[in-house]
Image (cartoon, rainbow, N blue to C red; front, side, top):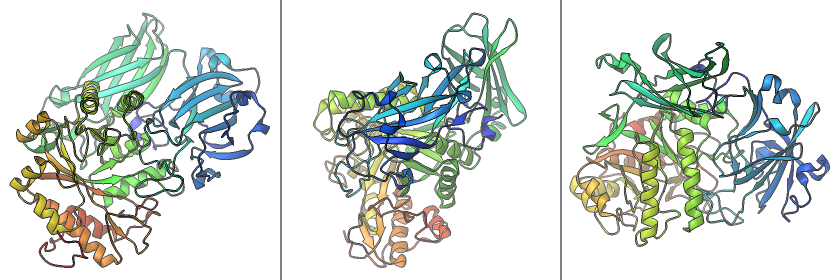
Length: 617
């Protein structure tokens, strides 16, 4: 199996095996509002203690789960049986159960034995259940999830803290919300891979991580190919659990020919990487996985955002990744692929997944179809030692999870000072933002990092600014000349009443032209006659909507120093009705019309005349 030929169903496409079993579907379920489950040993109880059933991986707050209860429930329990054949230990193999994401603290038991604890609502984890499985044809898998609905220190993103949703906040997500699956793997097996393309060095640098230190007779064999063309092969004796590889790609040496191998939105070429763990004494294959990468560079400089060393204008949209029936979850790879395809059809070449880390299968389709992605995380709402610890740990896990995906081009650990609300005045919060940006670059020096998107930057490689001026002339007035843009970036209040840059080093990057200017949030126009719906401004007719949205896009394209934008937002979400699509995915304007607005493919409308709908400077 070639990784690039996957159908996108495997939950971890960057490290794929051919045989696996989904554990999604109907589980037993119970709320534990009184916190009685641990003392009552629900992990050993018969199914009678679980009084309901739930459809995994949909959070219990969502309609698709079958629970559809949006109340405050800090602890939930899940239970299901798993066939013994699914957890095969034949020939010394290990039985693994993988969890894509469980919000927020998870404990796992099998056959009454505790096998795992994990903290972090967006990050994957794996439990090895081999050594505790009881005899029998079936095994009982139990999960307890604890997620304090009032916690301000745990990363929560757009999850509302009130009993009823309001403003830009949505229903909470508790417990399992990404797929659960089982694998039977060799005793010595690959647990993680990482690939970093080095186009100028004509190489791919990689890491292959094993579950344990193997014997000195174990080798890792790596084959890099593009279609049927073998680009590189390497065999290395494994000395440690992590083996670092430098795979030279001679085909990149010819600079006039290398473009055929490079990844870009226009040509999303992917490179297959086959990894074999072998006993060199016997020649026996111990483990084999399929992976892939994309050869490309991302950089900033000279006021430009660059892909493959050439400036690229980013046409991005804010994607909340929140769906009416499933909330933060998705229905699977077909839905994720459809969203990527629709984003591209609407004229966007980039997406900012906002206040959540999206399912890795979304990234697979972005890799395969050619959509740049800005990697973000859910924010905490307060600043404390605990908040620092929780956000840092979860963010670094996410960077490790996603750094091999070529579609990911920017890291955004903070947004609009969420969780660092006093960063303009608090040195500790400034150090947190700077420190997390620095450690992100340490894990991945190949991508730009935004220290705090929107305003109050401390150490950002991109000057990401949010401007919700809701008419084209006003937006053009703010950014229509280099002088006006420079004055706003250096101002004390900016356009949203927050200082754009709070650290002199950030202004130095801007002044030297190293940090390009992007309008990383703008728009927010609601098409709704319902007074309870929310947007930065509202219109009631499609013609008004088309005009005002169009003139906002035109204004930014006319701004000489703005090299990219991110429109708010892709789809209506709850009461936040400022999407280009209604919440059911129906476009508010014909897709071709949206594409023309986004790309500027038709003649720009005048910014000096036309309806203003009451929005004046």
